[in-house]
Amino acid sequence: MINNKQRQQLLQKLMDREMERLRKKCFKYKRRPFLYGDIEIIEEDLTEIQASGLYKKIELNKYKIKHKISIDIRLLDDYFNYKYNKWDSRIGINKKYYKNRIIKVIRHELAHAFVEERYEHMFSKLENKNSDGSPIFLIVLYWMDGYSNHNCVTAFKKSNFYKDTKIIKTFNDLDNYVFDLLYKYDEVTRELEKINNYRNVKTDEEFKEIKDVSTTINSFRFAHRKAGLNKNIEHKTLGVVMVNDNDKKVKRIFTSKATDWEIGCCVEPENIRELYNKKADIQRANLYKDTKELYIGDIEELYAGKIKKITLYEHSNIEESKLNVHNL
Ligand SMILES: [Zn+2]
Image (tube, rainbow, N blue to C red; front, side, top):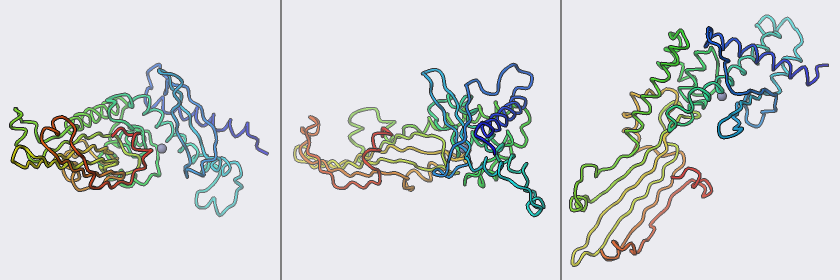
């Protein structure tokens, strides 16, 4: 009978070997480990999340992290319980097949750990470089001869990124390639961070002339699942102001939007602006909140901030508890 100690020993041995292979691939002539942070591997029942493996970053303190990898118990069961039969072996299924399956999952999780250590803190506004739908993660993973069964990978394999991973030879080249990409993503997303239609306005008078004032705050992060550029969360407020200014009635519209975008694994920095223009006004966010407010009264009340506000409608599919989490 195989006991838990032997199962754990197998995981440790396979991970140590894989880390040594990756260390040689990335840092052959350098005196450094593949990962700086401590790393732990355990087996776990991952039925609930329907995964073969799981990577978790554990923050030990403000400066130090630890990597934790879990491998699904069924992968080990399949390996240890395997009994030879000639039908299986004819289609290439044998004990080694099940061992390789575990190695593949370990490699995938090690790539998460590596991206976390090396790239997550660069251009820190762009979060989730490490997630399964992120081009950065998938580029590093496939350069390491890794594998992923997430949905977006079918599209990724047709992308220029994937082709590039096949051409890039050394880790140094990969590292420069990733840095270059992050630099370009950062540049274009910062340009799109704040968009309004009163940028060129110089005086209060000119500002008053704008009948429909709009402001959009965009934030960008890498995607968990999807291949394209997608709106994850959007809060939109349409404010209609109708006030009496002496004898005149004044009507102005203020639109403000806060949008959280996800950059999927096939989106190149060069395409972001075009995709943004296509989707900014049309695409419905995964989580959204739309509010329309009407302000009525006198102009003095408006300037004094005491004007009467009526909420005309509020459409949302976000639970109140989640609203604060994203600070939108
Ligand atoms: Zn993953």
